[in-house]
Length: 262
Image (tube, rainbow, N blue to C red; front, side, top):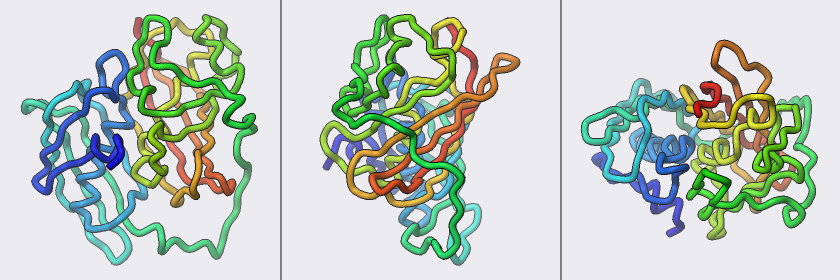
């Protein structure tokens, strides 16, 4: 069993735990929390794959036991929609809604793609994201192999590119394949794209995070790109794309976050 599988294991009655080491400065990564909750919602749905999962973040998650409640909203011929909530010591942490089905039944008869994978140098020419980044401790990075496109790491030196875009490669440090559940983590594993525009540095809390899974990734690392188009009223959006080794789009994401809090 891989570290990710172990960290997202939930019993049939919804008992699980936020594992240590999947955090940033002590607070669990939002993508990891969504994957942990979705692992139970998926089991309750009786379907093998997440298609669309949305999380609303109500409180930070710290390591320890959690309880995940889930109920089927609708079970149809192709999809089941499940609502759930993760609790820690009786306090709600994440509210989740997910639609689950079987990606093996996806119909590729009609396709239209306006765009393609981001242009990124080979993985060994990209910059490994370290668990220690200035004053921040990103323990999550010890379990991942996230490599940023050269130049995208400049925010760690206090240098901003001026365009809110972050790209690079993702794989698990222990070699676990990237599957549909893992894509919920992948889409939140990179530094926020807003780190490259003229905003003060600091924590960027996520209010809402949605991942659309578009396919089962082919073997190998995936390429990712995240862009912020609008910062307004103390909020920002971040739109993400994940592409597999066969240049297929396998996930899209969108986050609504707060501008950095010092």
